[in-house]
Length: 149
Image (cartoon, rainbow, N blue to C red; front, side):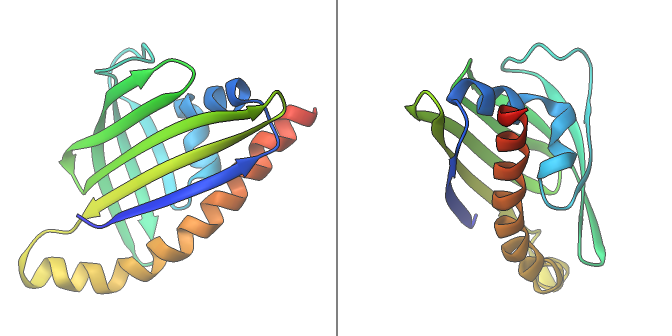
């Protein structure tokens, strides 16, 4: 599974950043390509929460059901797919000082095997790489704007 790692410096507190990242309703506002991130059942902000995600990457729409598999309130959460497009992500937020933090993400994805998977990868992978940079900028802008308002 290819893993993309990013470190995003944000001019906002770690608590504010984590709260924004961990709020499922915000995901389509900052994550490139995500058009829907809908809870399946009650949201407890804990291991076991489940979400249906829809992501549009170029001409393809990918669907995935993900579970929270790690949760440390205020600092870390991890998601892993249980159905659909195979993906995983781990987000951690580390304070630099009271008004600055770093958000770290490890994002992994896997296409199905065979000809279909190879064809899908050729179509989608360029959009993933482009989307990572856009996600960095959008996340930083959204959190910093909230912090300053």
